Picture 1 (tube, rainbow, N blue to C red):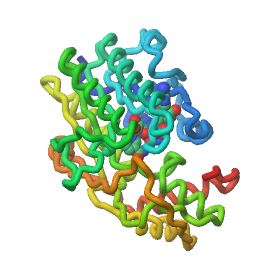
Picture 2 (cartoon, rainbow, N blue to C red):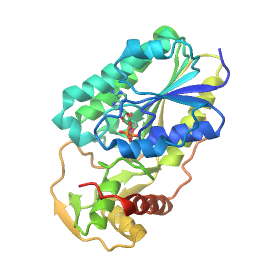
Picture 3 (tube, rainbow, N blue to C red):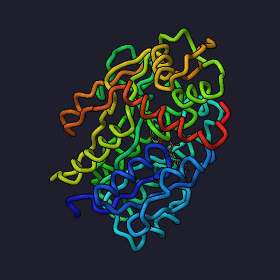
Length: 332
Ligand code: NAD
């Protein structure tokens, strides 16, 4: 059994968080294999741009569906993988209400498939990208890992919680160390275009009013992508240093909440464009607020977020202006 993750398999490795994670792992001297099917949820070009400069000697991309267990088992045959970071998913709350079956297939079936890959190839470490959405509309804040998560309010949230349960089963049966990391709204360069910050930026760039759902008082805990990646890296390190397998659920969040209307002014400031706002009714499936208790991450991973929201928004704004400088702005 390896005592460090020399070779890491990252599912969803071409995605927003996955691309940033692969870059960090390569920089830290790991070999990385990524699995991604370039799901058409948003343009392939954004994903390719994030991974195109990775050196072929240490980075391999397997373009396949995570549900295709046999193909993955076969492709990994000659490679010894020390850990899986499972990030591939259909992400997004609102689209999951339109297509619950597709979410179930990828997020539940796909997670089951990747756990099967871990078992078949004796991979003893499985880090799962879970979500704050599992807390639903819980009243108690900040959200802590021991809080009840029995009442998800979107198919997406229900599938992410299902993944945590499946991962527990495999931990129990096959001694796979598993960390389910519950990410709280992640943002930064190359953020998914369906997420609010990226949508607002495109509305600003095209002189449209910003569509604000609700009265602007809903609150979110935003986490900068480099901080999330750092949490994943620390989780891998912890997993590989253990004497006995463990299963842990760990929040990774900014641990500060921002009101939607303040987020809109913040992104306006970062882009240097004054926002005009169009208020629309609250969307079904959206939670009222998210707020992470991160004491467990501090204790187990010695992790704390380091990027304040204004700094992170500036990083994002610089990227988004640069990205759309020489191509059409994606429709909102
Ligand atoms: P993303 O859509 O940018 O990345 C997901 C990647 O998975 C994409 O590149 C996509 O092509 C790939 N993928 C989707 N279905 C696949 C399949 N069947 N087979 C292979 N690859 C497939 O999303 P992201 O924001 O980077 O999210 C990564 C993970 O983090 C997801 O599991 C998501 O649920 C979780 N998460 C994200 C956030 C956030 O704010 N971004 C918050 C909480 C949890």
